[in-house]
Image (cartoon, rainbow, N blue to C red; front, side):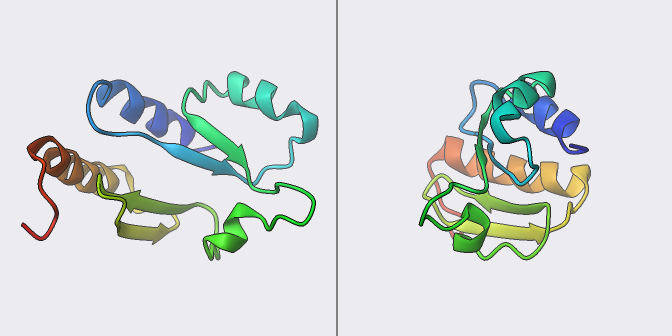
Length: 111
């Protein structure tokens, strides 16, 4: 829950730019999931980690070993950073800004 305020500020600040957040939530909200997302003002796509049935949890598929695990994915779909635990708002913001600029310029990180 502690990251929600910073995530909300990113969504607001980067509105209209090539940026999106996708969340995977491991909290046990059960049928209350949608209400909890509304309560915490989560306006971006957020999924329950456990999908039920034979389908493995999202965290299992992505090899998540701790919460939060943050993936920074560029506009080409390449994972550029992975943090287990928050790197801090400043570090995260700087890395996001770099990739947003590259996406706006239509370049890749290696150009």
